[in-house]
Amino acid sequence: MRAFPVLRLACVAGLLLLASVPTLRAQPQVAPAAPPVAPVDSALQSEMLRLLDALPAQSSMHALHVPSGRTVAVRADQLMSTMSVIKIPIMVQAYRDAEAGRLRLDERHTIREEDLRGGSGLLQRFAVGLAPTMRDLIDQMIITSDNTATDMILARVGKDRVNASLQALGFRDTRVIHTIGDFFRLLQAAYDPQRASWSDVQVFRARPPADMSVATMAETRYRFTADAAMWLGSTTAREMNAMLRGIMTASYANREHSDAMLRHLRGQFSNSRLPATLRYASGVTVSHKTGDFPPISGSDVGIIDYPGGPIVISVFTNSNRGDFAVLEATIGRIAARLVEVWK
Image 1: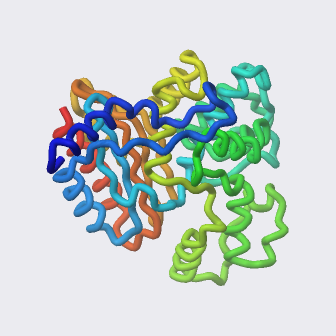
Image 2: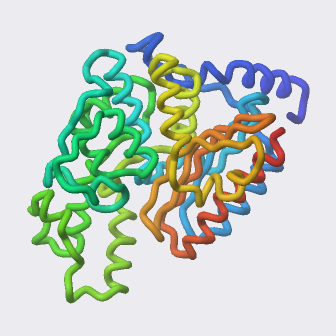
């Protein structure tokens, strides 16, 4: 960048970028080599740093302009709480299992009362006895971030197996830490330690303690999410971008199943972050997955397709003390600015 040898190295790094995506399919037992250093867009990186640092939150991001290999990395290797972004590797595991014959995408699973989970998603609002297919559950897990669907899929594929696959694929920091049910049980225990032994049904039906003030509850939730042992999942912006790139290149499943995963991401219902302004632009589509615990955590990761793209981008925020609407708008501004500059 400052001398011709560095320029040559940067060009080589850009050509080798595809090799940096972790893959199990080619060499299942071999740890991936350290990824080459991609060319950094320094001016744009400084701009992204200013936008993120203006938020009263912990933040990180990684963005890759696929055609040129240019990158922006702001604290991209910092361990972050994923919230529902962790549903992406769960989706990957389900499709890998389908490809291996361990499950069928058209198999049906009856929803019982003990399967219901609070938080995001629509399945909790239907009468028990509904029997969606595995494909339906995956779709709801991604497009509405359905927590009931997520735990039903995890029960089928196994949390430990998801993490074993992540390890084998070369992801050092990306892990599923808790099921949705366990996460909400731990939160209830933070409100009242006696709730630690509650059943899934009790947790689903729970209400905040009557004697807990709004301010106390907000602070309890903030401290709860600041404890990494309580996270739903963990990752880094760089690793999540590598996973998205791997889905794009069919590195984890065949082309048919990889395209199905991209369709799930493209169907995402929440459009208040990465696509906030881009969704109105001609020729732009955003395939993405959000992660939420408002107003404390709001993240978005995805693939932005447009003339001159695509861009693969992961933006995480944790421990937010500010206006959640400003946080969401900032992520939207970041995405729009990258599309404006990287053409």
